[in-house]
Amino acid sequence: MNPKADLIIEDADILITNLASPADPLGRVRGGSVVVAGEHILAAGPSEQISAGIDLEEARRLSAAGRIVAPGFVDSHTHLVFGGSRVQEYAAKMHLSTEAIQALGIPTGILASVEMTRRETADQLFESAVHRLDQMLAHGTTTVESKSGYGLSLEHELKMLEVNRRLNEHLQVDVISTFLGAHAVPPDVSRAKYVDEIVLEMIPAVAEAGLAQFCDVYCDEGYFTLDDARRILEAGRTAGLGLKIHTDQYSDLGGAHMAAELGVTSADHLNYTAPETIRELAAEGVTGVLMPLIDFAVRHPKPFNAQAMREEGLQLALATDLCPGCWMVSMPLVIQFAARLHGFSVEAGLRAATVGGARALGLDDRGVLAPGMLADIQIWDLPTVEDLIYRLGSNPVTAVIKRGQVVRGSGGG
Ligand code: ZN
Image (cartoon, rainbow, N blue to C red; front, side, top):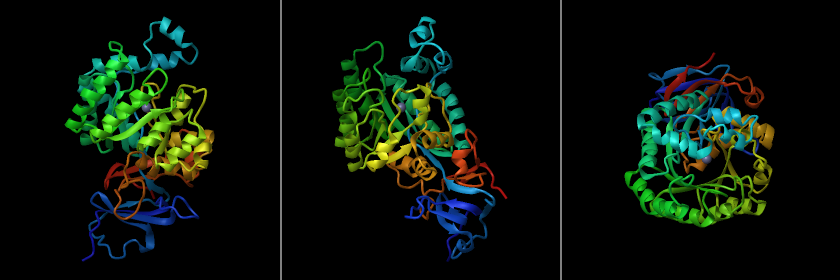
């Protein structure tokens, strides 16, 4: 008996499979269709051959005529859950120094968001995150990583992670939860004491409650030292969590070198990482997560060096870094910035935003449109793939399919 399909997305002008070949890293099929059964892809390929051996009788038909079909985006680094907003700080810093902004009494930085996040209930945090997540989905994102790190106490970190759990359960987007208790040192505790608290209390409690897949640490000048970061990551690993690190964003404390040694899943930011350290990361199979919009939002004096990363063969992911300092929901805009500012071809940008993002989360079931993969798919109203980086700031997404369900819009044609 032939397998039964639930959905066919048919007659796309271009189907981007991401099945790389030497001739085409995007594995493009001109005139392509995708057949879905349940949450997974049954077949993807040329439209005229797609129905062979498949029962399409009861399948819903979604026309993609005149459209491009691509894997959903995987946004592998966000701070999606936070209380309040730092719009006043952002607007003021367009023309004022940090000192002048503080003199005006405008709260700034991570600790300002910690205060606003502690004040809100889980329900309030959930509501504002849902709104952002909805916009991300509308821009084609089907998997989002979401970090804690604005609680900085056991109670409030658990509250944030609980919001991640609810987002994952109640919304169509998959939310991968990361514990980032080591985002900053809270104002009322010494760094040493806080690191003890993270290692001895918070990580075991988070792992016990099953509220996070990853443990992350901000290893940088003014945040956590190399020794702190190593202790925290080792405790995370012992508790069974995957490892991530924010490192080398504003200084080189040796965090990326340690990340290679520990074999973390991803090392993120990497503004100050030397080429030889990038080589070490590449050799250990670490994914480098790059976020051009945070460098833009903070007007970073030293944007990351993607050219060196490409030369060293580092696997790359592109992400939004959505956070109170960078209110960014659009992966197309991330790819546009990566292309124009960092020399990403449209092909490299797209791969980094899909299959690269999946690797940064240790996921091998998405980012590629092929049999057996999750049916996480988006449809664009664009005449060519290159228009994705050409039409600056526009959202090309007309439909999104998540785990086989049409959750946004409809087809084309
Ligand atoms: Zn971050």
